[in-house]
Structure formats: C-alpha cells, structure tokens
Amino acid sequence: MKVIGIRAALLIPALAFAAVACAEGDSKTFDVEGVRFWYRMPALSAASNTVQGILVLFGGRNWSGEKTLAAYACDALADQHRLILLSPSFSEENYWEPQSGSGAQLNQALATVSARAGGKAAVPLYLYGYSAGGQCAALFAAWLGSRVSAWGAHGCGVYPDACAWEGVHAPALITCGMEDRERFEISRRAVYAYREAGGEMVWRYYAGRGHELNPEALHLARTWLDALIRKERVAWIGEDDTGRLVPAARIQEIEPEFRNPLRTETLRMLWK
Image (cartoon, rainbow, N blue to C red; front, side):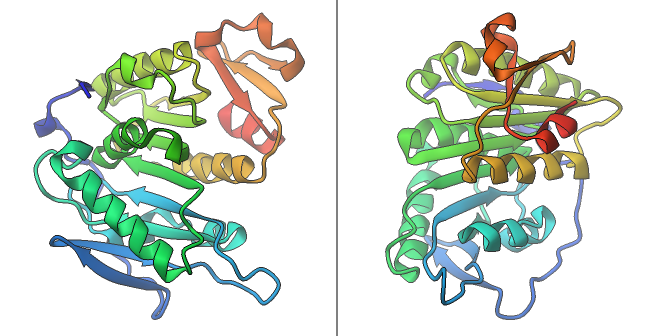
C-alpha cells in the first residue's frame, strides 16, 4: 500500500500533554513483542454486562498508551457504549505503516483484549489518532478494511494512496488546524479522495490553530463517534468551505466531494 504525506522527520507533535495516570484499577497493560499496550475495560452493570466494541486510540509520535488514554479522555464515552479502550506505545521507525510489523502487533493486542472480555469484543472496531497517531488511524483503516466501523484523525500528514480507499467506506472524520499548512493541504486532498471513492467523511478545520491537538477537535471526535454508535440518521449535509447546510433529503444540492454528513444538532453546531 502506497502512502502520501509529509516526511516522517516533520511529524513530531507540537503538543506535549502531561502524562496523567488513570485511576487505580481503571487501566491495565500487556506487552506484544516488546510494545506496551494500555487498555481500559468499560464499567459494566448487571443489566448491560457485555462489551460492545473496541476503540483503538493512537497517540502522537512515540506517545505511551498511558499518555494517550489520559489525553483523549474517552472514559465516559467508553462506559456509555461499553467499549474497550486500547492504546499502543509504538515507537519503532515508521510504525504507522501496518506492514512494518505494527499491524501484526495490533492484531495480537486486539485478540488479547477480546479474550479478556470473553471473546465478544472483536467488532465493531473504531480507530482514532492525532499526528503520527492519525497516520496510524488512516493507514490501519485501509489495511484492516471492512473490520473497521469508523475512523478519525487530527493533524495527520500521511494517508494511503487514493486507490487504497476503493471498497473502504467506513464513516470517517478528519480535522486539522489551518496554520498546520502542509498537513492541512494533504488532509484536504485525502478528504476529496475518500469521498470520491464512495466514503463518508466529515472534514472540519480550525482557523488560527496549528498542529496542537485542540480541545474542540477532541470534543467533535467524541460527539461524532457517539452519534455513529447510536446509529443516528444523517439529518444535515454541510458543504466544505462555504458552511452551507441543507437537510439530508436535499443532499444532491451539494457535490459529493464537498459533503459533510451531520447526524445530530450538536454535530451541526460543532461543525459550523
């Protein structure tokens, strides 16, 4: 699989979150071929005691899984929808390329947490990442294909070649700061390619923002994923750049490569 994007040397995240440990007992670890994976099981009740999916969170370049789980703050989302949170501490060169060996490591990690949840967490599978982690989300989404139910990326500078999206139609979200110029242009081209291949994509960029992982982008990602898991129907279609909105019934008024499917009023407001 070919990839397009900026040089790896430019992918060091501008933002350094403080590593905040989860509450004792919330998160656990295991190693796969020397890579430490952090995971968190959702809070389950007697009435809803089965895991319903896995959300893989990829951090910035060389982030630990512990740091990623703390920074992305997806615990409430995971508890609400009974998702296992899984985050790798990848650090080998070009780890965002699944063929480098990281793909096999992730597959083994998915099997491990699935087994620890009674073997019922294999699907659906969701991916989200920032910077180098966004590259993981995009490249792994193409590599895993139909196994992925949805994926998202922020400040991503490397995407699969356009031909890799043929047949990959999972709903996706890409966000980027406009001051992160090179990644912004690369991401915009990737958005058009994904849509032209038949994929559903929400594209939101932030004026005055650079490469940092801003709170607005994280809030949008969590809200977007929540709507997807709830199986909310698309209510609005937003148009890139103009910000025009039309009811979903009038989707033909916006060209396919500019369409943003928005499922809830909250998403409409966050996208606007």
